[in-house]
Length: 146
Image 1 (cartoon, one colour):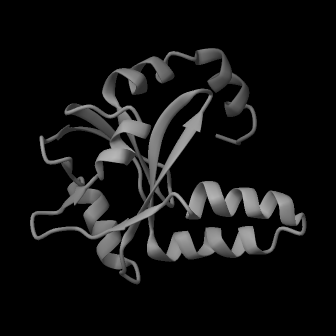
Image 2 (image 1 turned 120 degrees about the vertical axis):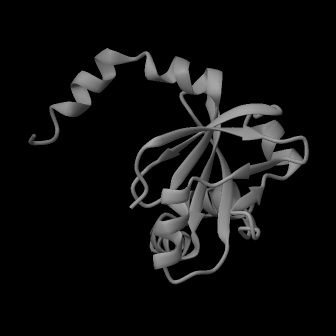
């Protein structure tokens, strides 16, 4: 499970270090590449990062959608725009330039945030501004028992 958030550096070659706890989770999975896909939520672009088994589950969900027009749209936007990457020996991944541009990630600091079965990569300033929405969080918290 991917949980927590980590501020990490994005170097001039477009690499980030995947947090150690996330690498540990990845080591327990079936292996394979990580799939990076650009995503925008409430006009806040970022990258979503899926381990291969989770990306395959997502693909199966999309394939099962009966509305072929909607399924094709999701295939184009999620799978057609994804990039497979591997961890290097230092536990880093390379974020291709076009994906960095699309997600608004400049050289400097980014936030890597766990999302249970995937993790997201955000521009640090955008991540902080997204966090400032307490009313939406209050509503969401009503959906779970704590």
